[in-house]
Image (cartoon, helix red, strand yellow):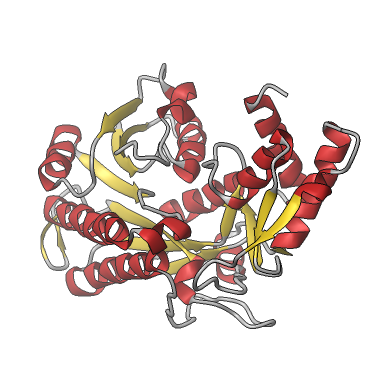
Length: 336
């Protein structure tokens, strides 16, 4: 049985990925490492606790001694690296934590993997030839777009927030280990994810939570910032494809082709809640515009042609279907 190390799996995307991956691949043992910081919740993985191929370790990806122990103890043959500080607002207030986790943590992981799997540059140890490091990243590394155009895998990096700068740095570290040492690594850059288990601070959970509580629903600036929305399970399926079939050293953009302004998002959620949990006035009455975020990128949108044409990936959900599933999950969470 092959042991794979997955980091950051108590967070949003990782906790959706683990049950999917565990169920699909019966010959994998999944060693899960998570620090359980504010965005990590072990309850997100509760459906996996009874599976003997699931192992959870609470720990820090920056702890080299721990990472080395895990590789040796479980004979790790693959890494899928989700762990990251990921909230842009928090990165503006406290950038140091983002540099530590996203840059130094990624370096620690990839360096231990290189030294465990390889004898030296371009020289894999016997029986470790197929070990792969998959780094999960974001479209925010590309900066911001004008009214037209899409991010492709060849778009130059131009990060604007401490968060996106730290993720761009981590991508570059992975690239360096491919080019310098011949490490078998791949990178995926995704658009904005949404779906079950997302942390309450993020846009869509914030809209749903405040709407149901009767609070003002805060929208930054004029609400016309555009994001490309990707249902989290579609992202998980893309990660699976790239981890198994992606070409060494390649980057693959994963996006949902679902561009929406923040205003369109909040209006659609309010319309669905008006139907599912009606009250005397529309939830839209709670929408409140607040001061814009510092350095708020105007538009992100991904061109997913490469992963679609070369690996056969397709998003199963469009925004209209995915947002209903998401709202239903939160209604159940809040017992409504």
